[in-house]
Image 1 (cartoon, rainbow, N blue to C red):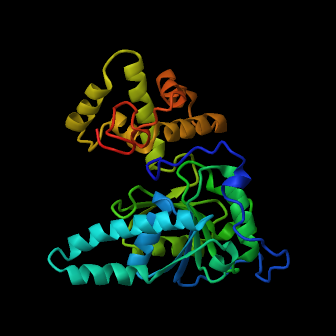
Image 2: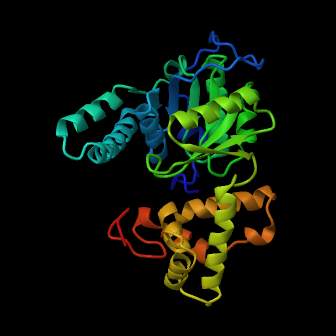
Image 3: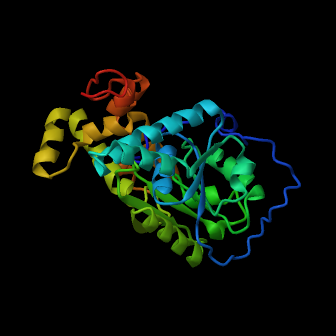
Length: 335
């Protein structure tokens, strides 16, 4: 959930991330599921150019990976490039506060490692690692990876950046389950040091080691976890946030008092209601509803909260809509 305030998919999944170009049924790349010897990851392809996708692209490029960012159209890709450029300017100012020339050189050098494409087959043909950061919808992700499995080289590792969906279920759409894992980055990617590296029962040791190595080379701190609901962070965080909602719904405290209590009493940088607004109330509801349907978490932890359901139904989704538990100065603005 912290990874992105991504929109909940309600449209036809195929329309949200359809194959970006027609894929020939006679594609020459092998789809054999036999184990491959690990190869050093040099070329990364990222599907999705939103906040998460662009952030992953930026961090990879900053750390000497060759990166291709893929999306449905040039307009989406341009927005992704703008996100990267804006973020790089902030990084450059911190690294070279008194040297405008070095700032410009840093940005230019990083961006030379970034390519963009709307052609999924072309963007995948040289990839050592493909990271998916598209809409949080299981069928859409499965459709994307099923298509990529036909065109990507045999050695290519596949990863999803999902924050809530089972990695193993996504991987079932491919014939390379041994080369499939999860890389759950956190938002904003350039600042957040943690990456949850998720291993399914089928993920090979070589594949898992390669993913850990990629994180380290990106100057991130990886933690290993199994393919369980919410992985580590969200498994702990979401029930805590839901209980905060119940406290308010029962009239025991206000959102402001709960946030103040957790910041000053528990040392949290943000209270649960501030965090919910930042993440997106629709995203939070999407995760909880999915977990409840999956049935792998105690019902009491994921029981519906009418307060949350009402705000989402009203379109009050948090910072991104301008109103959540708190009002904001415009869409995406400050309190």
